[in-house]
Length: 290
Image (tube, rainbow, N blue to C red; front, top):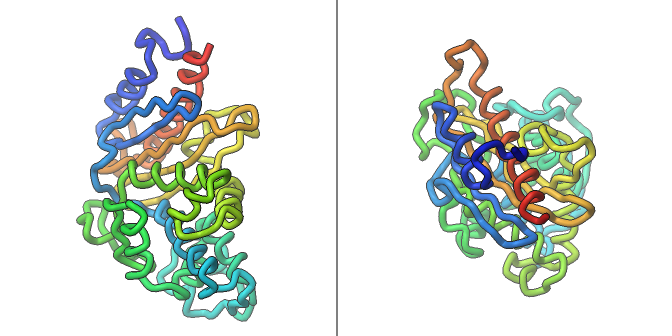
């Protein structure tokens, strides 16, 4: 028996992992060595949570490329930036700190700091970021808020938050990756190969190691962005092996119970489910390459 168990195929194993839980799991995975793509509800609209921030970063880098923004622009941390913010560390710091737009993007991505997200987003507009997504082909992504409301109930409507699809996020990550060697891919994103290299490195700098990386060998490089929503957990990223891109995985859990029947918090099982999906790809795609 191989590591996939009796099912044998990656597709079957991924389905087993999802079917074992009472909540919805949508995903798109792609073996970057073979091009094989496996999907489950990949075109269905789902809460994005902080996975939306990858597209915010790219919209900002488009503005940098067009010289409307400067990565070295100083930004002063104002007390108002911490209002209604529930993530990151900046909300606990003393107002008056000055950082660059580059550092604000870093904080937004590697710690999912929503004070930093405000700093970045206020140099754009909600309409600009939403239109940017539509213009590059992310038709299922809808930016509705600068910072999502804190008081949302677990059963909130999709229209209460920014939404996306697993397919859209996979497309964005694939295009950022392609832009490392393709000026055409960079142009599709409205920016340059150099700025796309910066974006990819920023995704690699992610320090939150739950979900996609959680069951992978220690030190595995993963360029990814996770999200914490009232309805579930999500993570979208590129996994590397032996120094090369190995697979893309974009996974979104939804309708996750607050507490599972055995008393385990629902979010714990949601994150573990994404980790299991990722490990199934790690083992299964490696097995198929042999």
